[in-house]
Image (tube, rainbow, N blue to C red):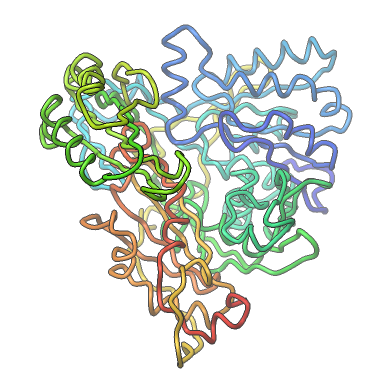
Length: 602
C-alpha cells in the first residue's frame, strides 16, 4: 500500500464542518493552527432528502456552501499541501467536483480532485433486491415493502477504503457521497499510516477519533452539561474546531484550534463519545469497535488522550438509509396571558377539537403547553403561555390550511381573553421519512475517479460473515466501588451527573456520566430503565434500552420511537431530542450527601 512519506509521524486531522449550515470560518481557523488533513461532514440523517428536493427544484445535489468556503482557502491549502476529505458531494459528487475545479481555476491553484461514488442505490433497488423486497427498520423491526413507496433516496453507508484509494492515487481533495461520518477520518489515517484492512485495533481507534470530532464544537465545549463550571460565569465563548492527532497504533489526542474558545476535557470527550451511539459495540462497515475498551487520560491543557481501543472484523452488511414521502403536517401556536390558565386551556382544547377534529382522527396529534412562569405579578413574558398545536396525517386535506390552521385562526375574537397567534397561519408541509436498514455489501459497487479519469473499482475491506449484525444489550461489568451510605439530599440529577442527548431516525439517545467510580456505582444502581421512565414520563410506553460503559463511568439510554418517524415527521417541539439530556438533568433525585460533598463527584 502506498503511504504518505511522513507515515512514521502522527497525522493531524481537523474537522471544519459538522452539518449542512455550520460555521463558514472554521476551515480558516484550522489552517491557521496547522493541520495535515481537513475533514468536513455535511450529511445529517435527512440531509439527503433535502438535497433530493433541491435537485427536483433544479438546484445542486451537493453542499454548495462547501465550495464557497473552500475557494478562499485554496491558496493556503495548496501551499501547505493539506488534504481535504468531505462528504459534501451528497447526491452529486461529480457535480461538486466540477464546482471545486472551477474554484481552483479562479484561485489559480492546481489540485487533483477525486470523487467517490457507488452509495446511491435508488435506481437499482428493485433490480438488486427484487420488487417484493422487504427492508427491516433497524430501530423498530418493521418491514418496508419497496413496491409500496416511491423511494426518493437510497444510500448505502460507504467505508474508508475508497478514500484511501483516492489519496494513494494522488488526490488532494476527495469529494465523497454518503459515507459513515467516521470514515472521513479513518481514510486519511489509514492512508497516512499504511494500515492493512485487518488492522482492527488501529482502525477502531481511528473510528473513535472520527466519531469524536465529527460534530465539530460538541467535543470542544459546545452542548456541554458542565459549561457553567468554567469560564466567566459559564461563558465559554465560541468553541474552537476540533483536531485529532492520530498515531500509528490508532490512539489519538483530541485538541482544538489555537486561541479559540471552549475547552477539551475528559468530560467533553466522554459526552461526545456517547452522543448518538447505541450499545457497547459501535458498528462501522470497516471494523466493529468495542466502546468499553476506550480509555481517556489528560494530556495537557485542552488535550485528551484516547487509547486502548479494540476492534474486530465487521460482517457482510452495511447500513442503508432510505427516504420517502410520509405525509403532511401543520402547526399553529396560540398565545395566552395571565390568570386562569387551566380554564383557558380547557376551553381552547375543546374548541380546537370541535373545529379540526379529535386527536384520534389524525395519524399524530400533539398539544404542547409552554409556560407560564407565573400567572400573576410578573412581566408579560413571565405570564405568557404558548400552546403549540401540531397534527400530521397522510391525508393532506386534514392538516391543510383551510381545514386546520384557518379554523384555529377563526376562533380569534370568539374565544378566551388575550388569544393571539405567534405567526400567520401556514400551509401544510410535506414531511419525509428516513428508514434505516441494512444491505449486503455485495450489492454496493464503489468507484473512485481522479480528475475525470476512468473510474477504478474499490473493494470493501475484510469482513467476517459470522459476525453478528447487532449484539444484544448487556452489561459490560467492571469492579465498582460501594455506594456511599448515610444521609441523602434531594437535588437535580445534573448536580452530580452530566448528560447529552441526540437523534438517530426515530430513536433518541440520552447518555449520563459521572466523574468518579463512586458516583457511577450510585448511578448504575439508581438509574434503571424503570427509574428513567419515572423521571422522563414522556418515554412511558416506549421500548427503552440501557447500556453500561463502566470505563467511562457512563450509561446510555435508547428511546425507540420517541421521535416518531424521524426529525421531519416528529410533532414534539424538540424534534431532534437535543434538550432531552438537559431535561433529565433537571429532574429531582435523592443523592448521597457524601457524593455531593466531593465537588460533584469528581
